[in-house]
Structures are given as C-alpha cells and as structure tokens.
Length: 109
Image 1 (cartoon, rainbow, N blue to C red):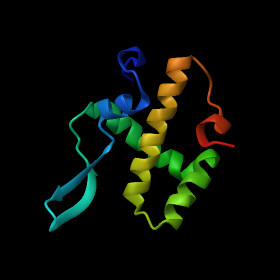
Image 2: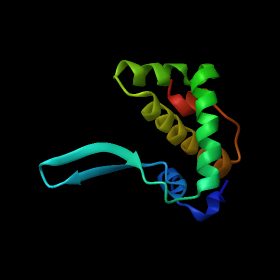
Image 3: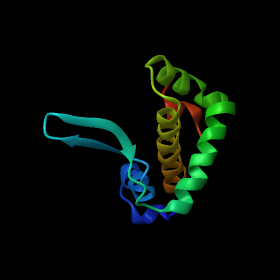
C-alpha cells in the first residue's frame, strides 16, 4: 500500500490507485457508463480488487452496503468497484490513525 503520509485525504489515496469512477460525456448527445481509468498503481489495484470480491461475498460487515447497492439496481462490477473504493477509504483511515477496524466508524451507526 502507498504511504498515507503522501496523501491529504482518502479521496487522493483512492485516486492514486485509480479506482475512482470516470464519467464519459461528450456534449449533450453522447453519454456512456462510468469506468475506472486504470492509470494508477496497477499492482495495488489488482490486489484490492480481488480482496473486494472476497469481501463482497463473505464479509458480514459489508453485507448491508452490498445489499443497498443491489437494491438500487447496480451491476455486479459496479458493486465490486464501490467495495474497492470503500476498502481504500477504510485502509486510509486505519493507516493514517494507526487504528483497528471499527465497523461503526466505517459504516455509520
């Protein structure tokens, strides 16, 4: 994982790995689905992506988050990318504060 001291926010941390969505719009007539750009740290992105698949399928803490996205009609890959983004934010908080994982802090009350 990249050193969190080099980043001022979790958004910057996630952007370094480049798992943030990029919208594609060209004027008013062309609008495509969002994608991740895949420019950032490929090795970290691959590890976090595979971890997100496992978390999505087997972690009880993420179950309400995943179900909420499913109920909104999100596709499977979009849910995985949302889990990746959530993991990157959690990693940033854990590493920046030298803390342990707290489900209430990560997902709210």
